[in-house]
Length: 184
Image (cartoon, rainbow, N blue to C red):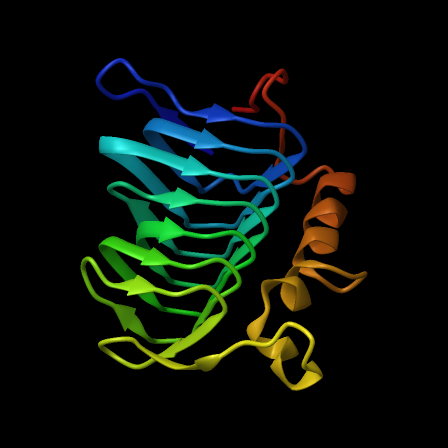
């Protein structure tokens, strides 16, 4: 992992995180606890702070920039571009783009390849598809047919990404804690 200060701000990292060695963190970035950040991710704060909550999982080659705030228990798929507010318990599908100042309500899912345009506000528990992204339907957390639209399906359980990240840590790959020296 490469950490770069910018304009006097240095990224801060919580505990029990799995952060790949090819991740780049720049500037005023705060990462919570129990997160996984996979190879090729760039989190660049050169204009406004970026805040990432606890139990957030960001897959390969995603980019976070400009006024990004991600609450707890969020799953971000491969190759996403995030410049938005993402509420807790959201799932952002592979290659989705969340443009500046957009807001994704808690418990929502953005389908793979969708683009949520600037200043768009998505209500809680919404399933968003398309480009530009529009609310397709409401997610009912109690409906088993909606399980694939919920972040917990991808995060929790013995085969979820949180368990996978812990497996990487147990095997000595990419573990980072705020009080540990970061390997060269």
